[in-house]
Image (tube, rainbow, N blue to C red; front, side, top):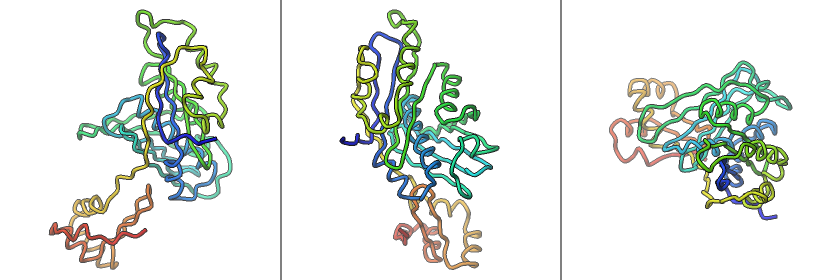
Length: 293
């Protein structure tokens, strides 16, 4: 079977107060996995969180980026996924010791789940705390969405070493002809029959048809999802400027180079004294880099 492309597909129940989205991550997910060797259970949780981030970013119609962060004091120390309104994604995780089993709350331990909405125009960022209620990422996030958006929302997520995928259903306010008392229960009960392999392998249109062939569904054109990390040598140079010349010189007095490692894409940026001098006099040499791959 041909694997589906990295994309987000939206669909709408005609004349009913219900909408949905399906995301497939294939090459994008491989880009995330190529950077680090994650334990399988953590890998799958990351994949589910990546799929959820795309679904939520599309639902919130972002003009900027959304960052999902799980900070823990257990075996899992950090999970971070960032997705922009343009469907650009990056993700990383940190853990300690061997991880073989457990739910997200069990692996995180005494932790917190934070959603940050960062507007592209430089406006004020918004942060929301997500209670770690439920055993899965889907349980945790759909409860948060129902409370924050005041709209009933359900998520179905799956991931393995090859792909990550998910589906979101959301009940819309009933207006005029958009009324059906049973549609939400009917649609969610049918979606509960979804198998992980269907989420990870079936094309979106085929999946929707298999689930809702008795409903009048309108499918919209798919939107591509890409892996993109925002790190750059110029961004590191700006960070060094913020630290200040005096502190940078102190660091270089102790070691020959300053090395900055991006956890998202595994890129390494190295600045020696000549590079640092260029940073603070703002000459073109700043971008003539020594980047470690």
